[in-house]
Structures are given as structure tokens and as C-alpha cells.
Length: 206
Image (cartoon, rainbow, N blue to C red; front, side, top):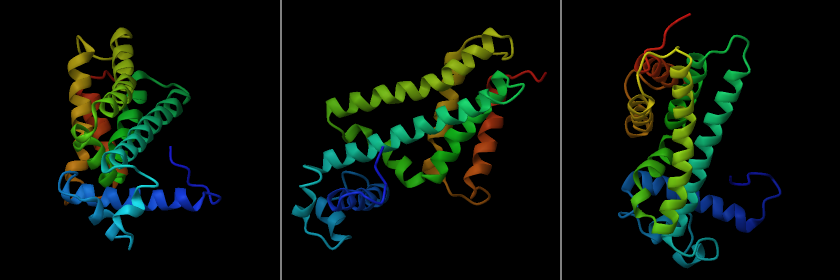
């Protein structure tokens, strides 16, 4: 995670400014369509001023993608833990909370999420595989809940894989279209997707 404390060094503060500018540029024009000069030019910096912080455009993309992947994983885990701690928690309520957290994050951080979801292939092989491992952890958060609900007889699907694939695909796509007419509140999007997830697993109400 990126340090956002007030005692951050000037170098780290500059790096954060570069990341923010790059997120906007990559989300707008794509990684391939954005030059280092275009990113630093937004900040009134020369292109060479980036290199003490990020040695290449690819390293900058990796820093952004790593931050986004870890943010959403932490957000989902926190949502799941909070739901599990509620009295009378069920597999359905826990799944709904995690999916709501996942989808609302994709909406709230749509520019960052767009870079995270759609620019992975521009990373080096080593960086790609490092983030792919985090993506597997993210998928596992949902998969464990779906499998738990099936084993408990609370969900009506035969196997978890298809439902998990559908849920994850729906959620990651939010950043592509958000905001849209009728869907401008991230929490409202989260609620819609939580309902969809419950339907996909054929959750049985108590």
C-alpha cells in the first residue's frame, strides 16, 4: 500500500503525484497511447524527472497496478470479516457483503480500476505473474464463500466455478461503464451486484 502519511518524504510525495497523473493518462488513452513525457508534462516536470522514482513507464504501471490489486483485496477481506462478525451471519450475507465491496470499489475507484483491469498485459512477465497471484487471492475470497454456501446447503448451484467466474466477471466490468445514467452512486452499484450474486448462487432465504 502507498504511504499517505503527512511525514512522507518529498521524493515519495512526488512519486504519488506521478502515479496519480499516470492513472488519469492511462485510463484516458491507454498504456500504449501514453508517453512518459505526457504524464510528467501534466505536472510541469521534465520526462527525466520521473526516473529517480520509476525507472521506466512499465515500472510505473506496475506500481499503480500493484497498489490497485492490493487495495481491492484488502477491501474485500475487510467487508467479509465485518459481515462474518455480524450476529446471525450466513454464507449469503457474507457473499453479498464481499461482492458489494468489490463492485462498489470498482465504481468508486473506476479510473484506477480501469488501469488495473485492462493494462495487465503491458507488464513484464515477472510483474504480470506477481499480480496474477494477487488476483488469484481475490478470486479465492469469493470462491471460498460460494463453496462454503454450497457445502452448507445454502446455495443451490452444483459447483462453485461457474458462479465464481460470473460474479468476478460482472464486478470487474463495472469500471468500464461507471458512471452511467441511473448508476452514479458506488454503494448503489454494490447493492445491485450483491443481489445479482445472490441470484447466481441461487441463495436460499432462511
